[in-house]
Amino acid sequence: MNRLVPRSLRARLLLLTAVLLVAGIVVSDAVVTAALSGRLVARVDRQLQPIALAMSVLDPALLDQATDARTRNLTGALDLISELAVAYLGPDGKVVRSAAAGAGRGATPPRFEASLMHADPEVPRVIRGADGSKWRAVVRPRPGRGGVVVVAASLADVDATIGQLRLICLATGLIVVVVLTAVGWLAIRAGLRPLHTIEATANAIAGGDLAHRIPDPGPPNTEVARLTTALNGMLAQIERSFAARAASEERMRRFVADASHELRTPLSGIKGSAELHLMGAAEPDDVHRAMRRIDTEAARLTALVEDLLLLARLDESAAGPVVDPAPMDLRTLAADARHDLHALDPDRPVRLTGPAGADGGFPPVPAEALVLGDEDRLRQVVVNLVGNVHAHTPVTAGVRIGVGRVGDEAVLEVADSGPGLTGEQAERVFERFYRADGSRSRGAGRGAGLGLAIARSLVTAHGGRVELRPTPGGGATFRLCLPWAAEAGKLTEPSQNPGRNGSR
Picture 1 (cartoon, one colour):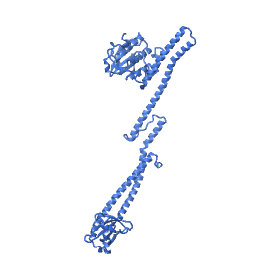
Picture 2 (cartoon, one colour):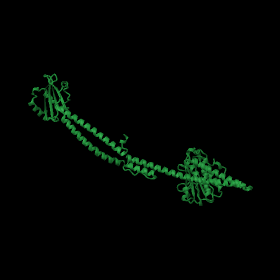
Picture 3 (cartoon, one colour):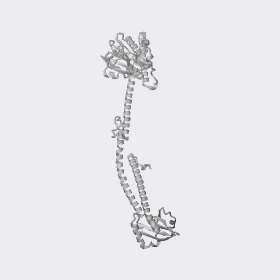
Picture 4 (cartoon, helix red, strand yellow):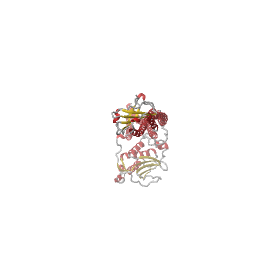
């Protein structure tokens, strides 16, 4: 059975449409012919009733050859009745007298059976001729004389009319089915054309062309248009996912390569110092230098591994919370950052002010900056920013540390007046293992290039962001922005709670 059903969607739709069309035509033709046949038979009944009434009072002896001519004249005046038969049945059910008249269609007169004596005079009935022809009969009793009169009309004309109608319906139905099937084939072909376009698009994407899209299907708010919009949206999402995956894989490869390089450097120092000792470096000074080198490189290796583990935890949300937020004021971190810079570069000019506005101006004194944050993690961010200034700007370059509120955010910014960053450096400064060289470096430096990457990840974990802006007049400004937290206002002023460097 399944082999008889076409596999093509177009063919199946066309077959289903044709079957439904044929079924509809057949049902409608049957209803029309049945209704017309009923109306024609009812018309015959109405014409038989007065004839039967007249025959019921007529003497049967008058049904001879002379009166037969009158009956022919009577049937000629009637429509739908071409043959008429009359029979008188006696009280015993036997035919007393009968006659037939009309144009005739070769049908034999009906059989007048004795059962007609008991027929309902109000209900016409169908009787059969010897050759099986159908006759419509009306039975009337003969008052005072006994017996009944039966008047029957041949239904040959009615059957001929219905047969001709069926032939017309059949021919018309065949023509309609053929024409509409052809039109349906073209319409279905045009309607399914967008599916071929979708198929071609899918093949192109399977071949690697992720930028390929389904063309505009035409009028909006149609099923095909909505499907096209949904598929194009899905394809765009897939393309972005593949691009993000490729970029992630590239970053991972670069990260692994950079991490391997950074880990190899301290390991090489440790290995070289150990080999020097094992080769018989007997001088105490040599042994001391080797052990100091091992200790230095081990500390560097430990710090690098801790930074990598912290970045891994920040990248992996399933690793659990990295920050433990509590109410705090960023002025504490700003004051500590100023002391740290003085400790690192005693000759560097450092100012503590409010944050810069859109016009570049800033208040001369810091303002409260209330946030919900992990003080240890945010202190690590500020230490990285301060260390960046110390490592990449000359000691004569002044630094301004601004803290306060800007809109709905608490802001802490570290603005230096050093050589600044080039466009490429500004774009990559937060990348892992990226180290700006040239004018921004005061020396060889031994940082792994993870400080700013860690700072950005920690601030992101707090729901904030780190921005890099050029300092008016030259230099770079790193701006830490966190959501304002009014509930942190219960904190005391920084002067009353100076933090770890309050004694300075």
